[in-house]
Length: 158
Image (cartoon, rainbow, N blue to C red; front, side, top):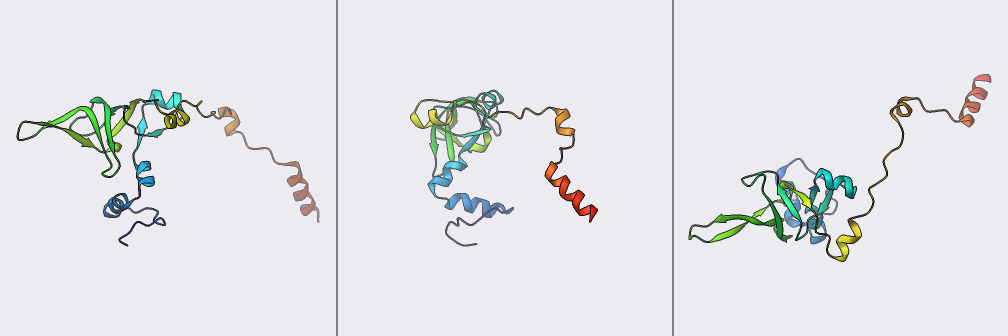
């Protein structure tokens, strides 16, 4: 694998290549890696499954030592792809406390911080329209086009 970041790279099953992709990714791609899934309530209201994490959002920790803990996001570190959350701290050997940096894929957004122009533009829009076809319509065979049936009749006649 090449040393620099490749825009042509699609995917790999190998974890070392996945880590390398994230480590060498430019900032505009790192932002996409900071997407966090929304809670079920927010998915219905926002019409989206995941949103980029921002300072001030309230999140729930889904995995790890602090599983089940809620807190506000203090900072989002794009360079290290980590998030610091209010109230999640570890005691150091010298007695002082320090914030724990968590990976965004271990979190779930419970409340959105809707302050700021950019967030207001993407969040709060009406959810996408649902498919209105009923179960009976989905299971019924599609009607053939009249033009296509005429062609098949002509071919069969000759």
